[in-house]
Image 1 (cartoon, rainbow, N blue to C red):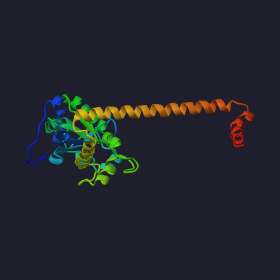
Image 2: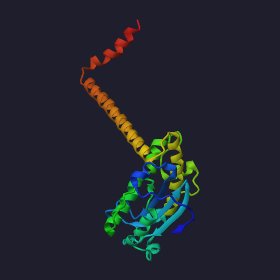
Image 3: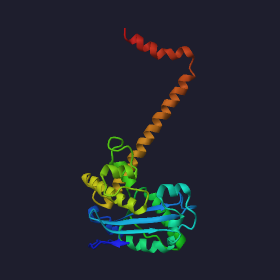
Image 4: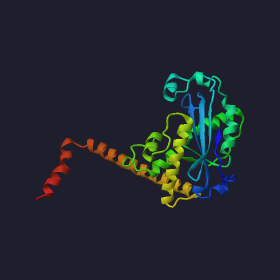
Length: 256
């Protein structure tokens, strides 16, 4: 872990942090590399995190992790992390206390946070460590609401957003590089939130609830439209063949 000299605002009370301006909060942007996709049968191979304050990285945390099982070939090809690299790496139970101390008093952020946090919380449970009640921001979720797809970007993948925003570090399927790229994206997305008047975690939470409700309503309207259209088609298909010409005939006659 490397730490840069900087005065860091530490907020230990999550209720208070929700009223602090987003630009004044500390964030720990975290990324994990793993042997697969589910924590039930896969393990962590690398953890990377950056501490961000005022849009600037003020500290970094990085460690390889021995997952206790061989790394599949497709994962080695993707990340470059293989069994030889991990042979002398510490187990996740030895790495987690340092990560949790590094992130203390901050808001966690990750790109597709559900994935990273599923592995981290499962690892904490396996190590007998309590998981702190971090507030969490998912940059994928933010981007899906804040980016114009496909006008600005074709999708909200980490690499796509990093290229669009020109982050100083591009993602590479290595934990620290991906965390650095995500931190740059988070800063740019926070700027977009500010332009909408969303400046606190409370405001962000309420806005996300409203966005989710609007999306759910839109999906319900579309499902209803499709159901009505399918029902109408089914009814019409059961009509005698000659009756199916009536609408077209009526339209022709209306011209005279």
